[in-house]
Length: 241
Image 1 (cartoon, helix red, strand yellow):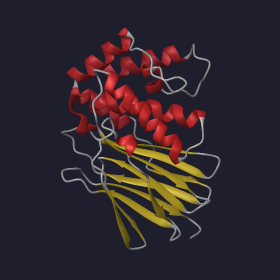
Image 2 (cartoon, one colour):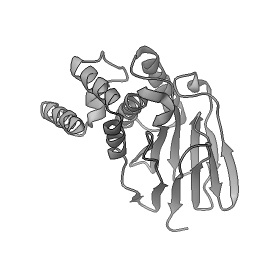
Image 3 (spheres, one colour):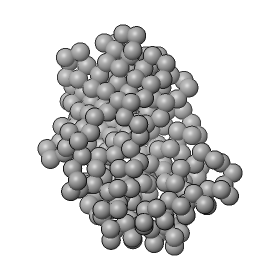
Image 4 (tube, helix red, strand yellow):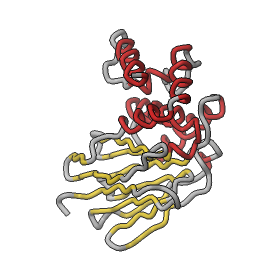
């Protein structure tokens, strides 16, 4: 009921917004033109309530997960997840774009402790706002990481967190991956590459670099390799391959 009340409240507020495609994470955190706004009392109430109700917080994060199978043009994205019922989940979000690109992120929401839910919602808000306003490329994503880290440092409701950003460039047959403490094995046609970085998002992750993975084989699997994480993998496939 707490989650339902929060969502209804934000949906009602969205009716007065000029944009109809702004999701509730953006509404909560008031992300606009690349800068975060002060928390409202309503947002503080919701976040405090989610802190007091970890079961509801987990249900909210699970409700953010997108469709498990998605296609655009010659490309297909799918993911497989076996999430623990005892802790906050790994959260994935992605967006297809008209220029032949697809951007995604993965967040281990449990790695930020009690602030995992709020931090994950904040990342979702910045990610969606960024992709609505500009093209996805490495330079832009590094700027996005700077913004998120600045917001994490300023907020008492957010903490450093393990995450990963990725950009599929279909035209160039490549996948650019930026690990921020969330390590993975990227396997394409039997050629496994370890993607690893010790800098968590919120602790100078913007100083790290993307790793470029060749996608000429037509398919690739990104499997989280952290000890203690549940089974989670992301598959990207070119259907015409």
